[in-house]
Image (tube, rainbow, N blue to C red; front, side, top):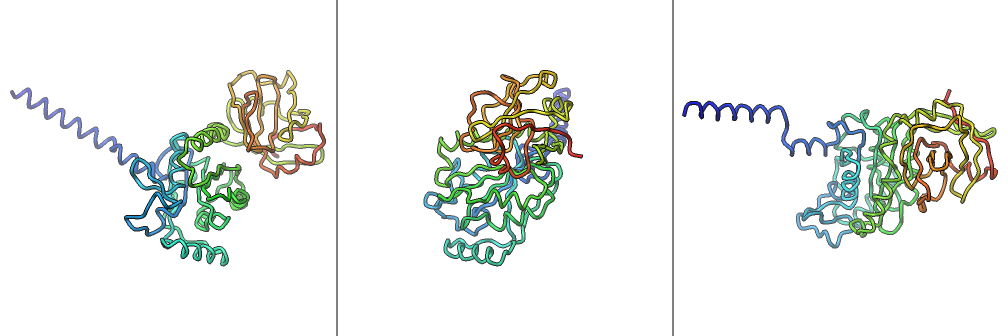
Length: 351
């Protein structure tokens, strides 16, 4: 009997030690949702009416374009999209919240938003990312308000030094598309590599078609490659010198060892310049690659040993051969619309 008591006491002590040493699953989830304590290199920050508005408890999720039901719980449409991105990337979620709530009445909200836009007013934020330095990739989500990104999103982006990071916008709208907000985000994120993002009509955010498009887009974005440290490079085309980055991946390192790397590239399909890599400069360690791209990507294809720079047609990104993303052109891509059909391009470290 005494032995049994000692055994039970030992078990209790052990369990208490485990509970002290390891936080509960709920605590871990809450810490991750705060976006400031995890070790992820990916942050998914989002802003929306839901969570920044004093909606009544009985607000109707079926009639509001900004609210959906997810497993019986009400969420903002942008938040729902952010959580779908988190499921596929494993990033940390962060809700952007303003100190002052926005009005629940839609007409009053419209008036408040126009007032902020007209005065270029940046609302004070209630929440802050504590360890922004640890993140290499920042997804930034928002609804389109009056064909613009909400001023709260601009407050968030101006609060941090995002130089050297990759910023990827995503948004929900009611038929307007992204409304040129990707360019606005790019201007606000000085020194960051800002990609064209993902947009979806808020009413279709939960459809199967949207989920498939989101998955395809995230596959093209290839956050694994982009989370590697980016090395600044130059892309010289005749007398033009563009800025870019090469990712510090295994493949990227092999390519950079050949710098300065000269490749003659031909224009193809109004979307890319590509060219054969000399045998002496070809990487030896092969990887599978992906059948897609986003604008600005510098890629390597092992199927035909070519490098390419994609500059257009992100709305038609499906490829017939797999490519590996090794870097990006960060300068204005419109220069590629003005080039000759065949050009010599030199990739080198930025001096």
